[in-house]
Image (cartoon, rainbow, N blue to C red; front, side, top):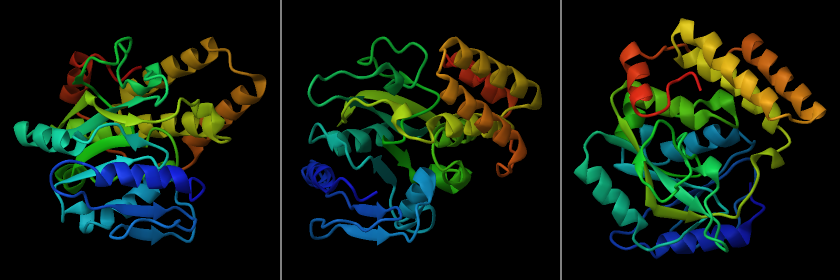
Length: 281
């Protein structure tokens, strides 16, 4: 968004220090000017904010249609920082060793405390962030994606704007036979934050949860999935204003178009279940 020039420069410096072949970098200004960047870093300035998935899709296309000019794309939040110099090499090795690995989700850690928030471990059993595992979704601000995934299942859903766009892509990738790994040794430093700091959080989370189900789940699972999430939301006892925004987003999820519906196969439902997160929660 152009409002963190110092953090962006630190991130770009950490990418430049990666071992092995240099990492080609594109910075997308999502409706804002791009601050000064090091020589060799390409920039794209969009006239309007397209949202997180829209901006990232523009970044993908900067590497050819669907990113096909490269084998793997890293997506990194501008206020993050690669903690180690071997992160790119670890990603290259992981993709080379496992031909069905489509996505790597990095571990996000606070730069001062080293703490990884529970919400940043993309599985239900999240108490041990140092345990790597197969997972069913990934973190949007710190990941690596094999570009063959985009060629096969398409990019991120532009219409989501913010929230759950990663899970939409993850479910489509899993349905196509790709695997997703959470790797505790690929680390992005990022200050501890609360997702609710965004003004649109409660509305977008609810709306996109409905869209996620409408687009991807077998019809019989849609009410089960959304019913479970409504119950969990109520149990968390949000404020009245937050709850009002949440229910407004929930209604919008049913009334607004959400893009094409391509329900996953039942064998994918079983695969998600075996991986520890059946698509009803």
